[in-house]
Structures are given as C-alpha cells and as structure tokens.
Amino acid sequence: MIVGFLFLYICTFAIFFIDENLFIHLNMKRVPFFYYIMACLLSICITACDKEEQLIEDEIPEMIKADLSKRYPSVEILNYQEYSNFSQINVIDKDQNEASIWYVDDIWKMTHTKIADFNQLSLEAQTVFENSKYRFAQFENIYKTEREGMDRSLYTLHFLYQWKNVKDMTHYVCLNDDGMFLAVYTWTPNDPTWFVDLPKAHFDFIYKKYDGSEIRGYQNNGGYYDYFVLHNDTLKFVSFRGEVETDYYFWKETRYEISLDTKVPDNVARVLKRDNPDFVYTNLYYIESPEGNAYFFQDKNDDRELGYTIAEDIS
Image (cartoon, rainbow, N blue to C red; front, side, top):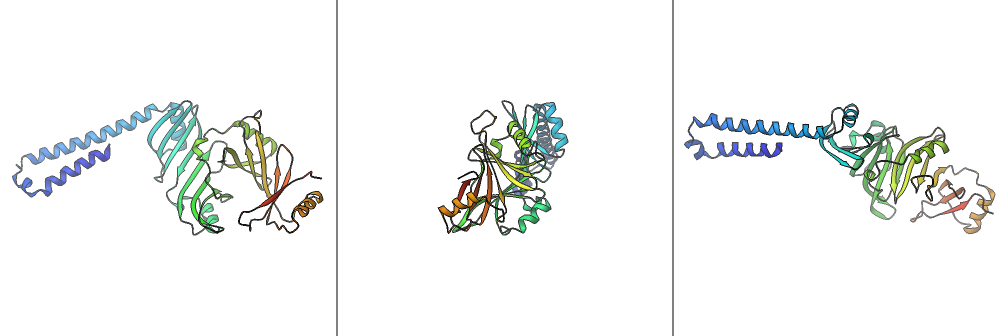
C-alpha cells in the first residue's frame, strides 16, 4: 500500500515540475493547494498502513503475541494465517531476512528463515564451512531452522558442486550454529515447513534409548523422520517411519560411523571376505534396528558408493 501511494505521489510531483508548460500556466496560488493534496495523500497512506499493521496484530492471539514479542522483539510482521490448529506468522527479521514462525495450539514450534548472506551465519559455522572442500561454492539458498526441543539452530546451505563425474550436482550441507558438521545430501530433502509439529514419541524414544543425548537437528528424507543426535560424543542418525510407538516400523534404525580400526566380529569379517575378497572399504558404520544390529562397509571411492550390510549375528 505504501509503495502504491508513494508511486502516485512521485509521478504527480514529477509531472508537475517536468512539464514546463504546466508549470508556466499554473496559477501560483494553486501551488500550496497542490502540496496540500500531496500531504493529505501521504498522510492517508501512512495512516492506512498503520491501521493495516494494527489489524494484523489484532488477529494474533494474545498468547502468541506475547511469545513473539519476547522471542523476536524487533521483527516486522507481514501477515498472520491460521490453519486448523496451526498458526503461521510471516515476518522480516532484524537482518532483513524473510522468516516464517509457526505455532501449534498457541505454542511456538519452529522458525524457518531464509538467510540473505553467508556472513550472517555464526562465526563458528562460517569457519567450518570455509575450511571444507565446498568453500568455493556459489550458494543457491541458505536457511536457518530453529525448533522446539532443540537448543541449536540448524543451517542448511544449498549449492551446486562437483560430485564424482557430475559437474553440477545438488548439494545440501547441514551444520549447527556452533560449527558442528552434520550431513551432506546430494538430493533435496523435504521442505521443513511441511513438518512443523514433530511427534513427541520420537523425542521420548531418543532420550530413553540414548540417555544424555542432544538432538541437534531434523530433516525429512523420502518420508522418513531423520534426527541428528549427539550421544557420547558420537553423531548418530536416528530414523523413524511411524509417529507413535504402535506404528509399524516406528523406529526404523540408528546409523553412525565408527573408526576403521574397530575390531569387526570374526563372523562378520568372514562373510565379507567370502562375498567379495577384494573389497576395500573406506568407511565403516554401525546400524541398530528393531531386527538386530549390523555393520555397513562402504567404498566411497566407487562412483556408486557401493557397500555391504552384514548382520552382527550372522553365522
């Protein structure tokens, strides 16, 4: 609305002064009247916009409004929308970034921000990325996601980069605001705003199974709920298919990398040697799942990054 009125004002002002004939023939007594009209239009514009902003704020429930003013005191509210028990507030933050803030039953759940400049990331995150092999990447998008129940912000950096023999492969790098490097995806994860209210059962399961752990972030890949979990100084990827414990495949698996020096059980090593005696693996992972635990041997030097999954109790 402001832009429209300002445009009208500027155009009229320009016509008035640029058109020499109009200026010559204009009675000087009308000049003050012209300015008066312009001042009135501008005043109406400002008043209307102030009322519009006030109307938006009036739509926001008091509980949400109180949380918003405490959590983000300097944002500019663009609009407010309600969807069943969800509420979404679109804002411009103090750094002029667009952000969407989500509430469920008036409780804050998530804030998703599109970061305009790499330099707005925390110093720790910048340092880690600049020391990685992706330091010369040209960014397509950078996002910051904050969630209820997670103390750390999750940065997701999207860019195109060489991968194997593919010149411009999609990359999504995930890292925390303290510089912890979490994951690299060469595919596009699902939009986090599709998954605002994460199942409480996931958090309960993680904290029970991995006592003393810290949930560092979340991504949804192909419909699976994937959590980055720091447990005993090891980053673990905990994946769920269901939302409640009674769901089939509620907990899908937990996967984490272990040292290549790890002593693999003799029965597992024997099966690997039997199936492929010449196989050389560059990375070793341990997998926990409802069906039992297993080792995953992967060769990342291979173009297809092939590997072998062998059950821990195989005979």
